[in-house]
Length: 275
Image (cartoon, rainbow, N blue to C red; front, side, top):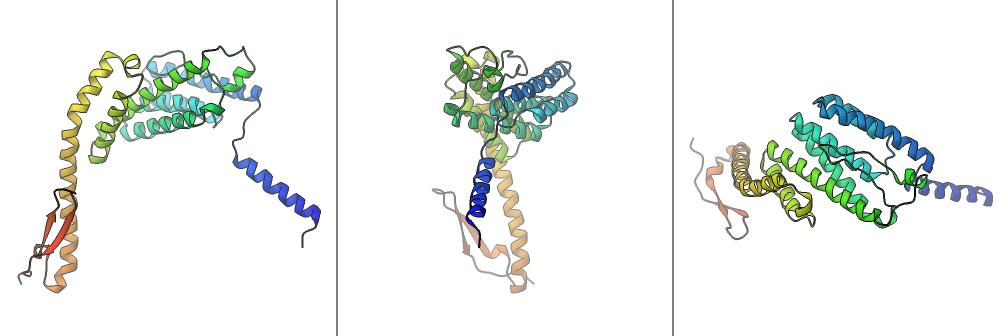
């Protein structure tokens, strides 16, 4: 039986475990040092990207991620979006989708907890890849935050979201297949409905979005029909293997589509497999 002191220690341990599950943050000075280190790797990666050395740039972006505090979701989103841009250049579509999705997920986390986070003036260079990271911890050790910093943060979030969506949509459309093409359509629709669409998107980007929203639906429909036919062919082969011992085949059944719901029902048509 546990003594009172032991019970207190156990309760204290439980409290510590609960706190460990919460987000742990570094002291401002240590966070600022880690972010500065991440920025140094990122600046080198940006330079490599500009020189067309995309493989090496990815490695440097990974190094920037490795030293970045994992709770800095906006800064993580910037790096992931940049990595997605590298993979696009290398025509590595799956990797581009993965990293662009990670960027978008991180931005969603930023917005969901935006009221609890201090504003951060992040990227200032709106080139092919985004600019310097400045963490909330670094800001605590630096100058006072200007009155419109929160609006600037929202603008930055919108800008990075637009870039990540464009990159994921492009990668999905290049990957092809019904699921990816439908995903690309959804990404382009999200882009076209952004509140900051007119101010954020360039004329060239708007033309791409408009064209893809026109071209992708027929491609998606064709991919759906092709994949559905392939699926039915595989199911038919499987069904024939199961029915053969009973002297039947899938030809003994009719698949009837309900035009209202798109669902299928199976009706026995009679007959048996010829011997």
